[in-house]
Image (cartoon, rainbow, N blue to C red):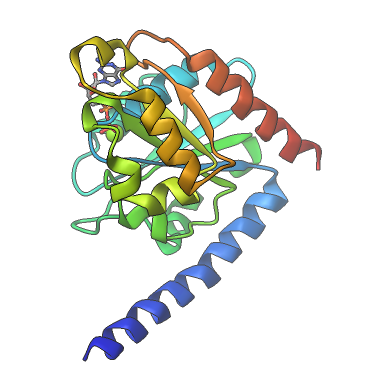
Length: 222
Ligand SMILES: Nc1nc2c(ncn2[C@@H]2O[C@H](COP(=O)(O)OP(=O)(O)O)[C@@H](O)[C@H]2O)c(=O)[nH]1
Ligand SMILES: [Mg+2]
C-alpha cells in the first residue's frame, strides 16, 4: 500500500516535470524571467510584491500570477499597481503546478513582459515540490514565524535561490535570532542570498530589487 502511494506521487511529479519543461521553453523563447514566490500564509508575499512593483515598474514590464485556494483578493491588490495580473483559484489544492500555470498564460501577453512573478499558494511545504517552469524559486520567512523553521521545513530553503526575511520592523517584539537563522539556512543551502526586509516600511527592498533586476536583464541578453 505504501509503495503504491510512492509510485503515484512520483508519476504525478513526472507529468508535472514534462509540463514544466514546456513552460520553461516558452518563457525562454519569449525572454521572460519567471519568479516563483513561496512562503507560509501571511508572511508578506503580496506586500513584498507590491513594493517590488513600485520599485521596478519604470524599468521592467512586470506581470503577476496570483495563486490562492479561494478569492481574488491578492489579484485585486496587485491590479491597483497597474500591472497585468491573473488569479488562479486552486479550490483546495495547496500549491500551484505546471498545468495551472500553462492554462492561464493565454491571459497574459508574454511578448510584453520582462518579469513574471508567480505568487504561490501560502504553504511552507508543497509549493517547493512542484516545478512550474520558473527560472528561480524565492521564499519569504517573516520574523514572527520563528527562526526554527529552516530546520523543520528544509525543502523550501534548499530549493530557493533567495530568502527574504520579512517584517524586520517587528524584531524588537520577537525572540527571532537572525544569526541562528542565517547559520541554519546556510547549513541547508550555502548559496542562498538572504535579504532582511520590511515590506511594510520599505526597508531592504531596494537591495532585493537590484539583485532581481540583474538576473532579469541577464536572461534578456541571452
Ligand atoms: N509589520 C509588518 N507587517 C507586514 C509586513 N509585510 C506584510 N505585513 C502584513 O502581514 C499581513 C500579511 O501580508 P501579505 O502580504 O498579505 O502576506 P501573504 O499572505 O504572504 O501574501 C498583512 O497584514 C500585511 O500588512 C512587514 O514588513 N511588517
Ligand atoms: Mg498573498
